[in-house]
Image 1 (tube, rainbow, N blue to C red):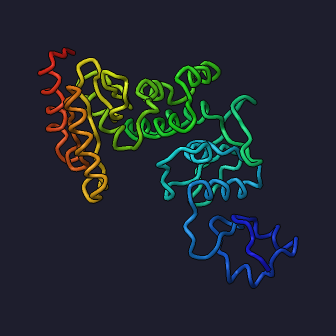
Image 2 (cartoon, rainbow, N blue to C red):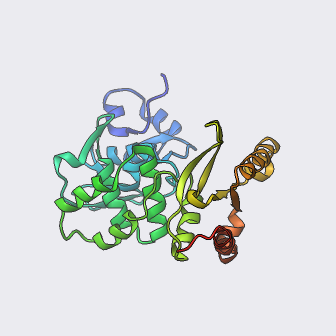
Length: 289
C-alpha cells in the first residue's frame, strides 16, 4: 500500500479500497469532517484550500485567501480559515463560507477546482478584510503573484454595484502595489502615506551614468534620490547579506542616493521616528508634499 495523495475524502478512499479503514485511522487524521491528511502534518494554505473544496463535495468555489494561495500569493497564513463561496453555510471550524453571485468570467479552473479569478479574489479580499493594512498587504501579495490591475477589479465592481464592503474595497484598492515583497514593506509604505506623503514608488532600479546596474531599492522617491529599505532579520544575522548591504549602501551613495533603513522594531515600535527620518531626508532634497 503506497501513500495516498492527500488531502482525500475518507469515504471515497474506503469505497475504492485504496486503503483499509484501520490503516486510514492509524496513518491519517481528519482536517475537516471526512477529509484526511497524514497524522502530524500541518497543511499549507494551498492544502487547506484543497481540503475545504473536498469538504464541499467539490461544489464550492475557493475564494479570498484560499484563492490567493492557489494563485501563488505569498504570506497567506496557514492558521487562517480556508474560504469558500458555497450554498452550504454550515461549515466546520477552519472553513469560512459565504454565498454570493459569481459570473462565469469570475471563476477559473486550477487543478480541476473552481477558484475565483485574480480580479474577483481581490474584489472579495478588499471587501471582507476589515483592517486596511491587512487588506492592502493581501492585495499586494496577490498583485505580485498575478499582476492583477486596479482596472481589472473595477470591472468586477461594475458588475456588482452596491456590493457590501465596496467603500472599504475602494480605499484598499487605491493603495495596492504588487512591488511590495513582504507584508512589512507594505506596512512601511502605508506608514508614509498615512503621514501625508505621496506613496513611494516600489522596486526602483538604480543604474550609473553608463547604464550599469547598481542596485534595486525596495521603495523610494526617485526624483530626489531618497530610498527606503526594509531590513528583515537576515540583514542583521547573515554575514554575507550584511556585507552585500554595506557594499550596496556605498554604491548608492556614489550615485547620490540617501537611504533610510527600517527594521521591524523601528516600523512597529518607533514608527514616528521612521517617518521623521524619511521626511527629513526629503526636506534636505527640497521635496515638497
